[in-house]
Length: 313
Picture 1 (cartoon, rainbow, N blue to C red):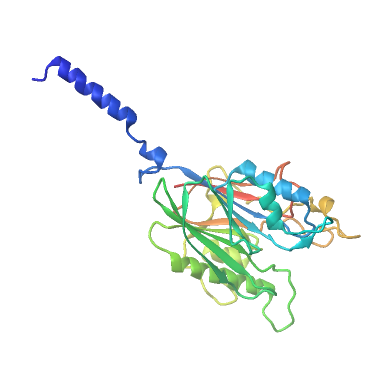
Picture 2: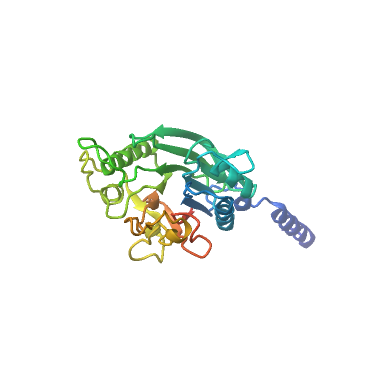
């Protein structure tokens, strides 16, 4: 039988060891640990770009503190009154906190990753999509999460606007949009493997009722080629607890007050609020929350609102 002093000493050593033992969840060493990451997609509207809008966009991103940001329309070099060349990207880099790293910096559709995130870069790529007046590209990044051990791929896209006119006899802009969506699904399918999380984010220029969204989310064949998506995909906004009814519009109805176009307003031109911005996930993703950020901070900053999704890993 162990003596009482020896037992007390043993228990004391156990307590000390427990106190100094590493917390696997806190340090990312436990594969069963769970936590969340936040995704944000935002078409920042490169036309009529100003330093004020750069500051506002940066403030929105810093306020949300997403782990991954997919941006669209980040481009157009321009000459400041003072003389130096600048761009949407360089302006955003100047105003954003130092917490973010740009991937695909020369692209119109870069991806930002928060440096303090638990996500570790694994791979990346860019694929040119079906032509739409100028090249449309999907940029993608693959990460491993240091806490849960799970891997994920994020795709950033800006698909062909359905209102763009084409000569008679050529494919319409809407048909080009469909073909681009088909190419995206084929790319995602090529990366597919058990347990991999995949997120398609960006301005799809497609409303919920469109053939493109029906193809991506509802197993409806594309009219342009008759193909049905082989992937089980879902809109993160619809997957999030508490979100019911139609998804909110993601384009700003008050844009006329920000950027009037001569004697005609956006609304008079038929450019009215639409739901065009999406974060789409494989169905096994555990979506904890999702929002369209239509608030005092985002109104009047771009012709689109940011869209977020918080996912548990």
